[in-house]
Image (cartoon, rainbow, N blue to C red):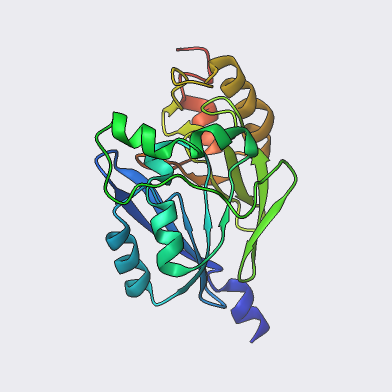
Length: 223
């Protein structure tokens, strides 16, 4: 029985692309306990709730990687629907979470959008937990000042938000963005995790640290 438990999948996940931004909202759960977290509920909350129902899991938390509208636009609405705490991002993104409504108006997104106040700000070295899954928190500024990454060493898996993409990196032309800071975050925090680490990013397909180390033009001097 112990060997069966060691070889069984430790986590399950559903990616729910939300809003016109096609942001990868992630429903992640512990297979042992069926306890779950919603990461970056950017909007389309009915679709997120339908995915939760489909997965037959119990959501206990909401985690946020950073404060941009496409990642937090539905956070307050989902918080009210599920009555669960919001954790993250780093407090350096407070100015973004305080202005979600204003940001939504600029993009023509108003339905269900409210400013967000997390129950817990996250810092480098913190951990977040869901069921028996534990993720280390890495503060990775550059795309936004308060961007964080969630990393589970046992599964060799990370959720990186908009810090790193398959073949690209996060944009840095928005207020608070810094390209040199972003590249430093990736080099200092993400690449040392190891080439075998796979990740889900905020938009588009996932990848691995090794694949991006070898082929990402922003990391190998080609861009």
